[in-house]
Image (cartoon, rainbow, N blue to C red; front, side, top):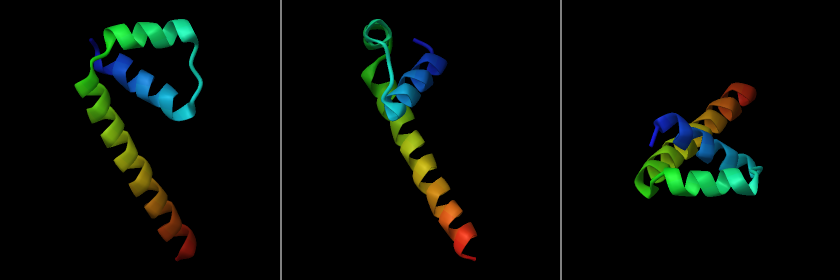
Length: 59
């Protein structure tokens, strides 16, 4: 299990584009806890990034 593979799997999940064979490989190689951690951090970064963007645009 590598963190880079986990980050790629979560990023592709955000986009919603993934080949079936790659999805199956990720399911077998990536654990649940790392996916949850990377997903949570990614969502936080997305939310704070959007908040910063709105604050920048409206100021």
